[in-house]
Structure formats: C-alpha cells, structure tokens
Image (cartoon, rainbow, N blue to C red; front, side, top):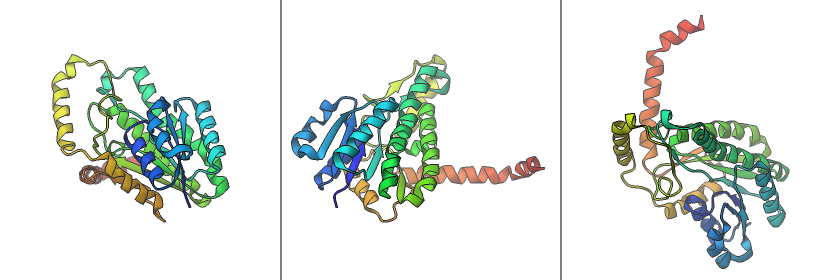
Length: 273
C-alpha cells in the first residue's frame, strides 16, 4: 500500500531528495516549504500525488493547519519527517539572544509542533513513523556551532522520550543523524553570528578541524535509498547514522565520556552520601 509522507523543509537538501524518493515509488507527499515555487518541478512531474504547502514551522497554528490539510487531502499520515532546520554558526560568546532563540524556534519548536500536530492522527490509525532529522552534532558537539548542537541535542532528548510514550500506539520514532553531506547546510541556508576578533585564531583552527571531519561529504541523492530502508523496516532503529563518518566520531566521543565518568566515579559516590 502506498504511504503518505509529510515532509518539512522540502525545498532542497534531504527534504527534496526524500520527497523524490517517496514520489518515484508511488507514495503521496505533503511537502512543506517557505516558498512552494521550489516544488513546482515535482508538481509538474507527479501531479496530485504531491501537495505543496507553504509553511514556516515556527508558526504553531500554521503547522497544525498544514498537518490537518495534508490528512484531509490524503486520508492518513504514515511518515512524518521533521527536516526543516538550519545551521547557526558562531562561538558561544558571539551568539545573540535573538540568534539563539531563532535557532531553537526552528530546529526544536518547529519539530515539536509538527510532532504534536500529527500525533492525534497517528494514534487514531494505530500506526505511523516519525523521522526526526538530527545530526552527528546531536550526540556530539563541535566548536563554532554550539547553539546548533544544543538544538539538536534537545531534539534528540524529546524524541527519545517520545519513542517510549507512543510505542504502545504502534508509532515508531527514528532519529536520523547525518554526518557531512553535499547540501547547502553550511552555505546559503546557514546563518553566522557577528565575529569577535578574540576568536579569530581559534576560528581558523576550528575550520580546519571541520574540514578534516568532513573530508569526503556524502551524496544527498544516495540518501534516498537509505531513508526508504528505514521507513520500510519492520523494526526501525531509534537512531541511525547517515554517512560513513559519524560512527567513528561517536565511538571516540562515547569512549572518552565513559572513561572520564569512571575516572571520577569516586567523586560521584562521595556526592551520594
């Protein structure tokens, strides 16, 4: 049976690639974007199997209306993809209050609103699958994107709680954690804080570290086959990396954390009393 997808941030990057993947195999897609003209090519190719919806995920009322419109059009929602988001660059001292709040409004609250709007429909039908687009930066953290990391850690936390809360309703949750891909995440869609000259030397060092981490960016088109395997799995994972770099980063990071926690366990026990 054909699935119905609701995908945010479908104008480019993973959102557009996964819209194409779903449509090419005969599924229906409600695709949201701030500018729906970016979806004209898909409408021309796939006709009424795609529903373009103008949406800013920061607007809770608009999110609930868009999800309801998608359900009314297609009669069900099977895969809900929280993909809308962007990268905010800047050292922690450099990030303004407005930049921090805007990052969380889109990356955290936008995903929360979509999730809350879709849940009643998925509960009623007794099935469904949330794909929450996180990042290797959702389980690790790197210099000059700390507030972005913070937003993805928040997404990871509420999604893990969500997975436990909705399992008895037949609803699945998967956090997709990509490494570096050839999208415009660090380009046109990125935002940059006003630089503080005190960090100029370290900023160059951080940029070199990032280049080393993302020496061979992944191909977004190849992610189509990967995402279809996730949504078609009988028992999909709670977390899955996209790309061949994140596992090494995660392994080093978690081994270091465990070693440090063990080293300081005597202090932990001291605090217990």
